[in-house]
Image (tube, rainbow, N blue to C red; front, side, top):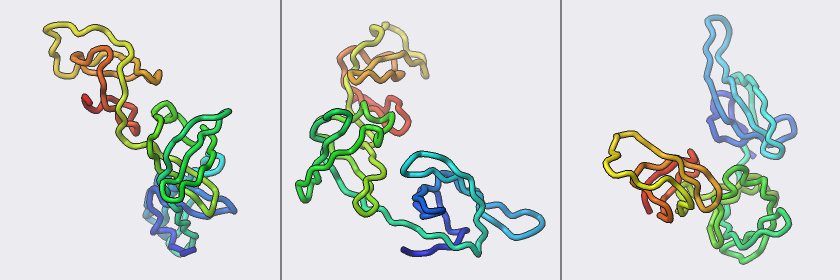
Length: 187
């Protein structure tokens, strides 16, 4: 694995540090008035989710890990495990539902997601950034309500609550940004 200097760490980089795999969440480069510059890095453990704050000087060497990304198609859920199929090899794998975290409700039958692997261990899974959902319930459209930034609450068919513009009605399809968990546009 390639070694990089402490000042080359960027957000999103995966590092092998203290015997574990860590993702850099936040990186601040600090140049104090006295002494050498360093990078203050907030790390998140990819296996258990714990957080750690570390200082890396530019002379410090850390191992950068390259994760293999594979497209996986969601097939079904079985006893708290999600079953996916590799699109290229047609191999099926089971991953725990916790791997998706609070984005789990956006997973739909046949959806293709990106799973990041280190050797054969699945560490992270990402649903698409924009997902089409159906509005299960919301307040009816009020005629003449055209305020620029007015929103109303809505519950989607997957149980997620989002704020939608006043013109969106019940049983309409909308596109939700899964990164921000907010309404993006009409489908």
